[in-house]
Length: 103
Image (cartoon, rainbow, N blue to C red; front, side, top):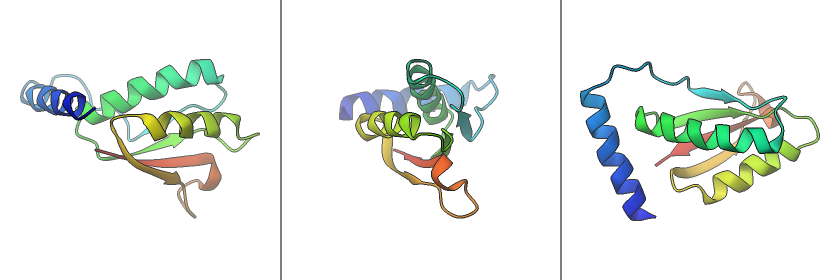
């Protein structure tokens, strides 16, 4: 896992030197997606955000039944680029949002 993070850091450094693509947004919208649709989108977004040098991002999963939030949290818990995550607080979207700190 450490090797993967080191390789991604090296790639991010090279990419910053040749930045020609727009930066990703500081949040990803997963609302109204199925778990099967949301998890690959979340993984790609985390990679893109990391490569762009973002250190904190918002994952908008909505409140609903909690199924999408639970699946996202399971994925975040084992994702190598995620340092920590927490539910949004007051003014951040509450239980409908997860704030993620990247490595």
